[in-house]
Length: 167
Image 1 (cartoon, helix red, strand yellow):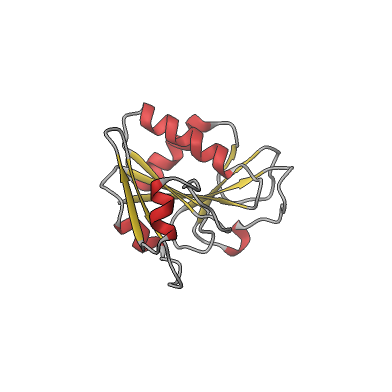
Image 2 (cartoon, helix red, strand yellow):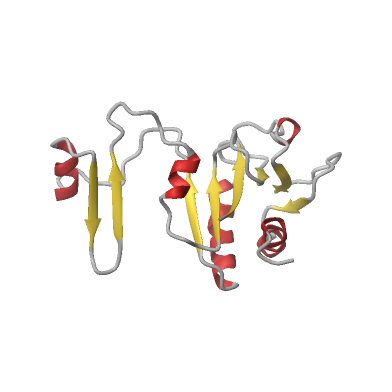
């Protein structure tokens, strides 16, 4: 499985870049899946929905299935957060998985940097798995490739080479 990460501080442009990369890689003919790490409690369900009621009643897993999509929600109910490896093992086969977040995991990543980010200290200095930087400002003194944060095509080219999708 080809895995490539998009990492950075809060408000550094991770989600926007991930979205643009999904669009570009799909346009190029690749099947793409994503994994997004959330640092806060989140819910994709709505109070009052049948699936919400099933979870509230105590179900550990609830699958919602229709003719156009399905979703599986798993309540941890005191279990540890699953590892990235565990989540990746549950995904259907695809050409590439883009992983947003997961700063501490050992896969190739591009670091996003924006002037408006919550923190602008470089992550690459302490993470050998960061193989490139994408920024909305001039970055100097880096030994890694640096891309304009909006240059999705060049970043996608780099990811294809870095993951072996294309030589």
